[in-house]
Length: 315
Image 1: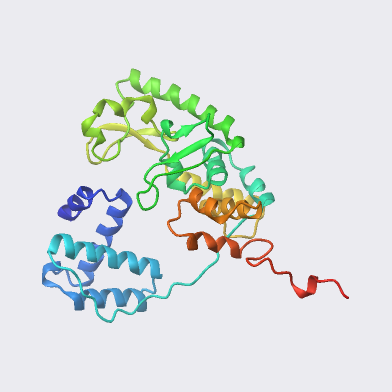
Image 2: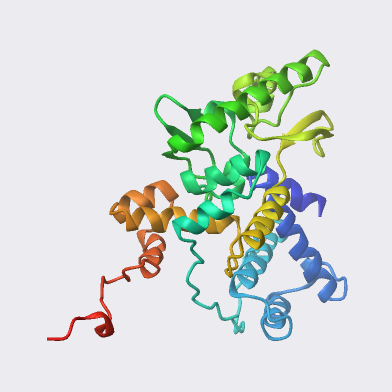
């Protein structure tokens, strides 16, 4: 497991991907009677992935993640590529995204408070994923150009999205609070944050620069699990998720709305306002426009702009 983690980090996989891959390899080894992966082969992997679909009844995305983890294990650690046979594939349902109306968004956001409110406003105002918002640095916010630079989003791609004017004041207040916190940390000998990739080794002093600080830092200082240095991580996603669930429940909205629903609503409302789908694709950071096209199916007017015959006037 230690070697697997080392190879994943050498290839710059994210911490979340590392934990997921290690978890799947551990589960595979236990399923196979604690035998070493070198002593196992394609038939064992096929059996494991099929069991996930048939008995564990996991989703298609979960099965694909397990397959990717084991493929990485065999290619980069065992030294051979898997040639999987007849794996029974888990069927992935084609679900439409849950979308809130603008009035429902206002009801939900109006019931959130503090840092969680500022983060939720950015999710809707800029179409960010939750972790994209939490990993924002001070230098990524450009108030003069009304832009937010998203670094290493999904697929390790950077993009630029809009900064909503309605978020400007509360975001400036948030940064003022964070700056005071950062000065206190510096005075106590701290004030460092985790830097991306090898940049921390090339410029270790940058970890204390104001520009590199998290826009949404955690309240507590922790010890980094890799470097063992005391530092402040970004705000934990569970706090925002819990606040979102409570706000939806208090608003009395009978929808399974999550933090990601705010991103879905951002895209849908832009299309409703008449913006073209390529613009929305760029703002969301989708690689393929077909991913963005799913929002055309949840517009109030319908994906094809069709009116029901029940709504047509009698002639």
